[in-house]
Image 1 (cartoon, rainbow, N blue to C red):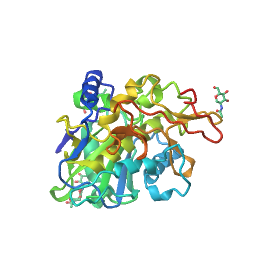
Image 2 (image 1 turned 45 degrees about the horizontal axis):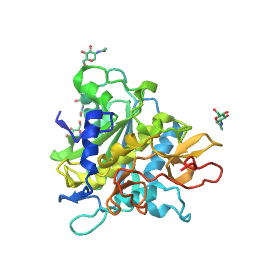
Image 3 (image 1 turned 135 degrees about the horizontal axis):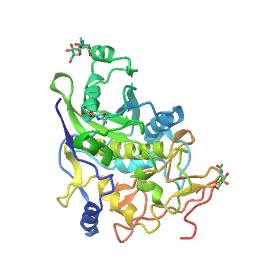
Amino acid sequence: MSWLFVNLLATSLNIPFLSFLRSAIDGSTFGLSYNGEEIMTEPVAVSLIWFGTGWQEPGKKAVRNAITSLTPSSYNSKHSEVPNLGDWRGVVRQYRESSNAQVSDKVDVGAECFFTGPELNMTLDHVVQISQTVFNKTAIENFSRNLKCNCVFEVHENQIYQILVSHTVKFIYGQKQRQLMDLCSSKFQLHVVAGMIVNKAWVREPQNHDDHFSISFSSSYYVGSPNGDEKIDTLAGNMLVQIAEEVTYRDGRGWISNDGNGLTISSSCFPPFLNAKDGPPLYANEERNISFNAVGLNGNRYIVLHIWNQKIKNCALAPAEICGSDAVVLKHPRGVLKGGRNCCESY
Ligand SMILES: *[C@@H]1O[C@H](CO)[C@@H](O)[C@H](O)[C@H]1NC(C)=O
Ligand SMILES: *[C@@H]1O[C@H](CO)[C@@H](O)[C@H](O)[C@H]1NC(C)=O
Ligand SMILES: *[C@@H]1O[C@H](CO)[C@@H](O)[C@H](O)[C@H]1NC(C)=O
Ligand SMILES: *[C@@H]1O[C@H](CO)[C@@H](O)[C@H](O)[C@H]1NC(C)=O
């Protein structure tokens, strides 16, 4: 098996690392710089491998819908104060490669595979083996009835390969495995067909209430998860961040912080959430008991992380947010929602 972890994203709560990040961002000269190599400027397909038996149909829909909601032209409604995922993607689209081409405005779901084999004592090697198998039709057919794919995965530069791990899957054996439990998302590189190397991003659902690595739900504005399932909503939010990372920062190149710390579009913005007094600002819909900070297609709502907006030199959910004088102070949303209440009215 040839694999290696790269760029372990700081999405697990790691306090010393965070305080280091904060001091890095306090300087007003902070920004991302282009370090060469291609970013994803053609329509992006996100291919999914679903690990485990814990998936329900509404949850799968919410995850797929999060991906298709990233295409800004899918929204025909007028400007709303609540950002939609296309607006959020608009921040990602600020980033360009050397030819001046910007990140693609189209994102869709690609091939999908489902692994429903043994879930106890899974190892990273199992994950790697299945992740390689999905690129080979013969190997998929020969693998076992536990692996089903609607299409064979293709190696293409505008593909993102995303592993989704259900809360029913347990990695309990050995240190390498525990790393998969300590983090909620990360990526590794993998040799697939004909010596090609691809990035595999993975994200897992939290296993239980003590496993709340998602800071999104620590807000005092939180009244319930956007799609009624904290596990799915945690997964969807972290997956969206990984997609933003993959299109702007690939193979260790692309857009990273100019301060030598190698921060990315999302890791640059991780600390403000924690430092915000009442947690991240969220909108609330009291009739449905849901909190969110971004709207998706088909009535879905999401909680997404702020990402680095290069234009306003601040962390943002949409391109037009106004810059504060202090780059780490997040502006709180002020929108009033029909059928709900703006939870930040007191500001
Ligand atoms: C696909 O898998 C089959 C069966 O495991 C193997 O014989 C074949 O060499 C693989 N093809 C490629 C292109 O790797
Ligand atoms: C099919 O799978 C079996 C058992 O996993 C393995 O021994 C065999 O080599 C595989 N055949 C091919 C063509 O990959
Ligand atoms: C987990 O798997 C490893 C080897 O893959 C084995 O040595 C270990 O005993 C297993 N642990 C449990 C609890 O099944
Ligand atoms: C919302 O939460 C309140 C308080 O917990 C509860 O009384 C109400 O029934 C909930 N409404 C819905 C639609 O779930």
